[in-house]
Image 1 (cartoon, helix red, strand yellow):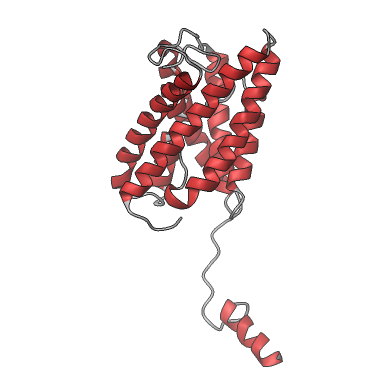
Image 2 (image 1 turned 180 degrees about the vertical axis):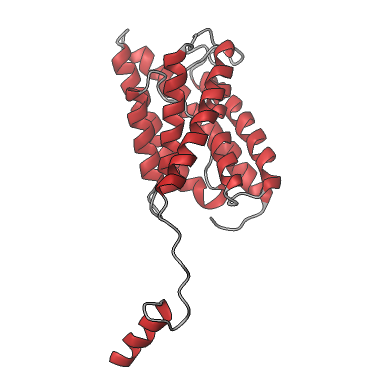
Length: 241
């Protein structure tokens, strides 16, 4: 990640999260309106728009802020030392604000009432397990993605998780927060948000733990110019030229 000042990183997280929620909620509204009651078609439209939009947003904002758009991801990156501890709270605050603004933006684009609360109940053990699985998989994809491939892997995973999880894969506390402000296809009732957030945080811990468990065993450091070291191999190549 490029080294930039905190205000620019926060702006990137704010705008990126707002656009992500506008994509999720807006495509849900459009899909539901055009699907004529066919929920499978509406979900498919929502999935394709979200996966495509997420890929673009990560590519655009990743070099600036890391393109977290997700408090769970920011918390894990802080624990890994990739995000300064002093930046965690500001990151989470702008992500939550961006999520709310994104919901309002979607409403404005579709001539809906800007201020509203969702009435869509999403609760129960199946939903919570699904959110834990979705978030664990998301963190695993992020942490194990080869360099330069995180955007494609994350977008593809979220697109798949929309269909194989009972919760349609929020996998993001900020998304759950923002979607409670929209009484639309993608909304979630405020009373359902705490259960989702707790499950997401548990999933983040599981995903991080799986990543660590999959790490190779620590290899003893090789002394410079010892057989097999990078320096020794370089010297050997030099002598054979």
